[in-house]
Image (cartoon, rainbow, N blue to C red; front, side, top):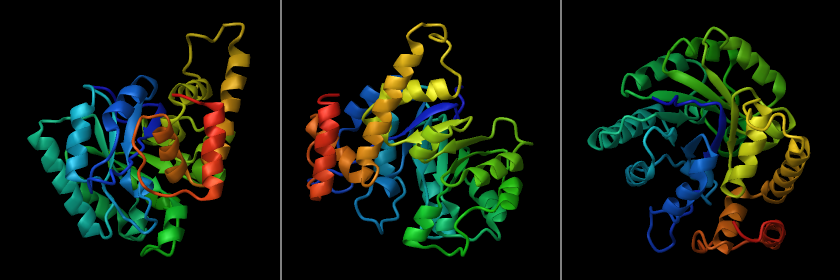
Length: 311
């Protein structure tokens, strides 16, 4: 079976709510079909894509069932389960596990959780031991200090402590970490898990990856817009692009591709959850979601469409 934590490009799939059908999302079949050849896996993360900044949203049973039906066999899928409490997170995991069992879905699948949203560092290894006892699948922890600062949590700390990650990594089905933050912390995390071959630490911040790529890969929202360009940059950064290593025009192509990716990232980075769906709607891949844009956001959409008028 394909690894649930492949090195490379993971796309945080744009989850755009259908304004006429609460709880449903637009364009999933089209988006997945378009993105699938370029990416190494998908992340389902309604918490990120919700227009409500106070929303704490794990993946619903209906969304998981729909996406599983669209997944090609053996394709890695990551699924948000974070709730408002430890108990709710375990309950969500049980519910989604039931869906997978009913559909006879065996993955590769990993649950994604931001533990400091609802839990302190203290007692976290015990909580994850309890969580993993409820599932046959793997778990990926998400270190997101900006989310904790923005919404607040029970923990005074905004980052998973290095010593706690080292202890957590002893649980063999905790298979990876999504990291946003400074380079030194990432290096400390890498040292903490060096006793776990195959444990992957992904950049969950695009700018960090573009400036100093990790050895595992990146979780990208911009891949919804430029999937093949992000794939090219990611494979080159990880030294995985062996097919064109000797091509005489390779370096110019990489430079031009990187410039395009960085340019678009600069346009959408202040409001990606509003700007990216608006671009997808302008391309006709989804319908307008009814959320108005500020003048600055409209200008960003226009600038992106000047660069990429069609998908």
